[in-house]
Length: 136
Image (cartoon, rainbow, N blue to C red; front, side):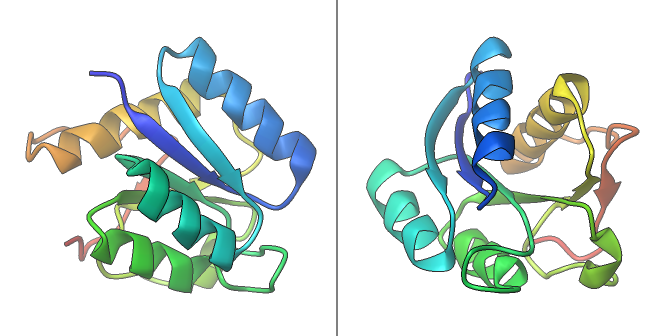
């Protein structure tokens, strides 16, 4: 199944690279949000299946809060960050974290895993993803 993916990342080059990866993997990137306000606007307008969320955004360390809010809207959230330890044991309602730097294989596997979780299909987490214990 093709996933509709929202990218929540404030570093333009990283966001554009992720967008290209997602397209190359056969999924549909629905937008890039550099901050919490834009992330929520895009989520409401584009109705993504999955959101890839960094922690430090243009408006500060708002990624954990955005991840929680997006998951409450029914979006399956995977964090992609160079600082996974800041998430502790995880954010309720979110799936897990992929440490940066990352590549297309890890992103593709994380999206596939997120879609399996979304559809209620049991699947082992991919090697590059650290799953959270308490999901929605």
